Image (cartoon, rainbow over all chains, first blue to last red; front, side, top):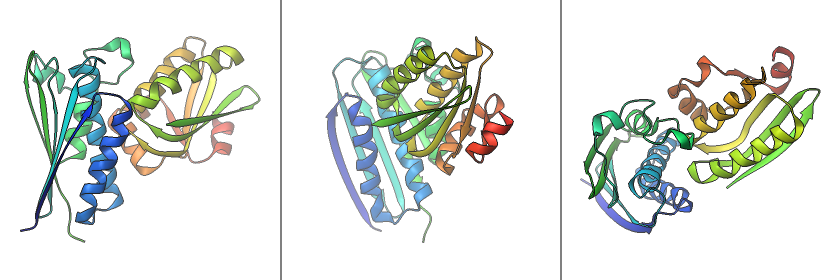
Length: 141
Length: 112
């Protein structure tokens, strides 16, 4: 089985939302994804990194770790922050829920990740940080 | 990064959105749009998404936010030229329950 992996660290600046999703798309391109598969992955990564910036670090400076792994035709993406953490993961994952209604956010971040990827796992500890793990199996071409 | 091109047809403000719409670009887009709405006093807006190659859920907030703003003055919002990916994100957010999408600017202007 073909395997590959990468790890990247960057500061929690909103400019890096675009950087992160383009990096993951470039890494995933070795799986010959369709345009739709690539758009799905880019959107999910964008949501996870945005969450880390807005909610994890609440727009303060912190480090975001991005890990990607390819096993066969499966891509695993991990987005890790060492910020505030999530008190109630179940509530945070609900569609339309947002902890910051003043920001004009739609509350759809986790729903997008869930819908556009095959699996989504969220691990979090208040005061320690959050780890989002997503996987997607790319169809054979 | 996102570029906005404004146009006016009768009492309708047409906004061409060009670039990638995410949390980073949304901040600026929001300010530019609100300034334009305040400056022109127009309350009907057509968003042209032909130039939007990437959008995450931040786009839902931007469109709904403007919809709420003009709705106070009996305004309306419509969307045109959505790429499949952009449409998928809006669909997930339930946007089409309150905001209509049209195939072309002409259609939107007639039916809007």
